[in-house]
Length: 388
Ligand SMILES: Cc1ncc(COP(=O)(O)O)c(C=O)c1O
Image (cartoon, rainbow, N blue to C red; front, top):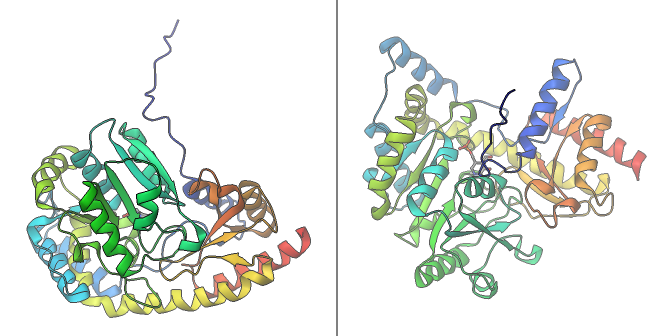
């Protein structure tokens, strides 16, 4: 007789719908089905060739590619610090920067360093779903704050003050996944001050900085020396699969994060750090990618009403639009399934991002090539006119 072994309650979390759909897309593509992708959020282009050539030369120069310092190579940390001066005009010290295996590992490191099991951390729905699931798996209590469409699905200091909840930490994300909307600079400053006054640990996920269409996003580092900044090489820098991100830490978390990263991860990927170091010399190429996203965004914004979707976010950054689909369906899961099966277009249901309201919304990602985005819109138009 075999014993039934237990699985942990902490791993009893929801799966990541966008990644489920990505897997389904890969399966369909393996069967020869021609899919247009508006699901998973990743650039269709890779890092600039010259930066890739440099990384390749580093393999030839040092085939061993051994571990680096757990918090990342000092040369890369200095380069990231320089980027804060160049891009934001803000000081970040290399000694406060920790390079991580994607910003996803930075979540684990910073949540572990800042919170204990039982602490309460607020997220602002609709939100990047991994926050909720990582926090739950660390036995940190998740406080969901519903943002308002009138506030572009972003928190305000006033909403935090009147939400009737107490919490030890708060995660914000501007530009946001899934809405693409941004917190304006004055409001960001108010949120930073509110967190300081209330003793709330603020975590600012700045994963989509660099991909903005009307104005630059301010870093929360400009307004607070207590904030934890998270960022990634996956989005603006187009290095998704190289798995590299970073965090800028307040002084009190430097040592805890260093010890955690030594023990949990030993070191972030070495070859990816070489590529990241060089990529800063090629930001003008990355800005051409952003121009491509801007053109795609304009196409999707024009096409959505023709698909029957009239109500969507004013997406000022990232490569997402969050849209209300009530005119077409009250079941975003079924809607996205049918869009994939029938229109052969992948989209992500809002249930990934908002537990209460997500059945009436979808997230559209427009990071694919312009040709594919045009074709995806055409397919959705043909399909929706047949189901309306
Ligand atoms: C808001 C946000 N933060 C963080 C991540 C994680 O990115 P990575 O682990 O590739 O750095 C993502 C990925 O989609 C995201 O959308």
